[in-house]
Length: 216
Image 1: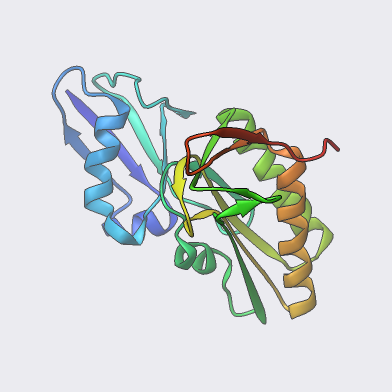
Image 2 (image 1 turned 90 degrees about the horizontal axis):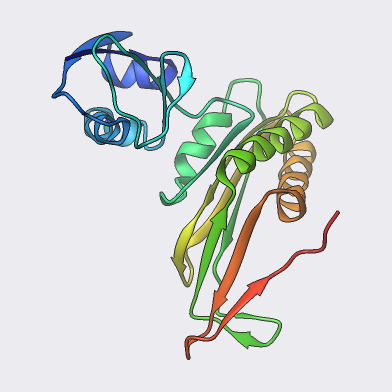
């Protein structure tokens, strides 16, 4: 079967063309195509989503002859992504840079070895992913509106994270440093109370404890 793939923004730059056609075996899933595209796009586009026939596609969706698949890379400003991939700090910074931006503030939330006196060996994050993506996008756009000229990009990991690994990355840029710092701070504080993302602490002895933030 033949499937058309469309590239946008830095995915188009990385591939060197706006579209191409793929001959795929019958029954190929969105996840299998994404693995193939990840190899072709390489480190220049470390994270992206796929849309099939103008709607976001689930990994298990089967592709059909004549489908049109769009590669959706992180956008500049308002980027809201969540997944098991490692936080790519360089990609977040690149997403918010520009000739009008005089400052870029990068925040990385990392796994530490204790919380409120409890020793921690690792953390597990889970999320209500569709809602979390929408909420993260809203949080980023609200920060951009609060600080005119600012741009925000972010990524939150889910899954099991070891000590010192980054669970969330936020890059905020603005014409002036005060707004960049403020936008970054606003985003992380809003994420902690609004995003449907949950954190479970795993102690060295295997004991588990769900960490709760105050409700807004």
